[in-house]
Image (cartoon, rainbow, N blue to C red; front, side, top):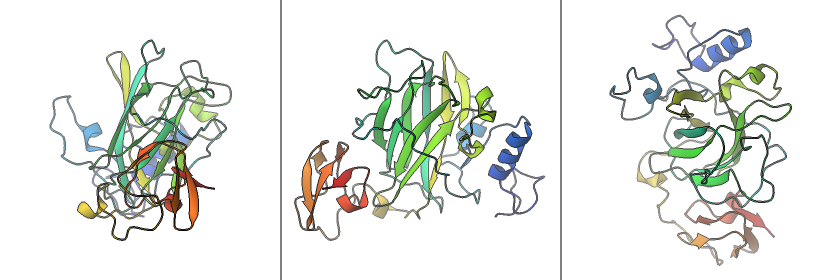
Length: 281
């Protein structure tokens, strides 16, 4: 719980913006979505398009880490490494999703694995290939960008995007991102207003922002860089700084592992620490 913040002048102490957002959505009250559901972004609260933005995103809401949600039946491992899920001729409304990944102490986290998957414009998931599936890693500032389309609807669900997020060497967060103003938000049993993206129309498409807060403490400075060298290289064939492809096999310690997703290894992503990348055999 946190005391009243300057942008919540009417809130009682101990009530965060996320709590107020949940209450407003539950009551059916229209609210300006100046919070992403986890962390407010300075770029979303700027007035005119040409207004100066704060050099870093704002993060001091006292909120809990981003809530998890069920994986669902359509997840597939081994998604390709890419930030653009759109191919020529792809049907649907263009959508760009951007944001940051923070630790619970508001330090941006570089090198976080983000694996996205979603339905196409018709509400179907590609289970034969990897259409609208892809993973990426946050950059040195903890930022990410995803180019995709607005997902279609299918029975029983509102519009949503699935994602798995994993900081190096830490557990996987599996969750879903939602769109404000969707009629089915009120009837979808899985919908959580804390996972609403901040969405606006831009030209013929839409832009969305969302910041993840992982249940880890970030470390400021170069020690949290994804290029940091290992401090104690372990035995076995696995090594940092190598490009691994799905299906590659390595040993680490006394165990064998198979690669699930193509990636370039780094210190902290040793096979036992990243089940999203390596499966023990």
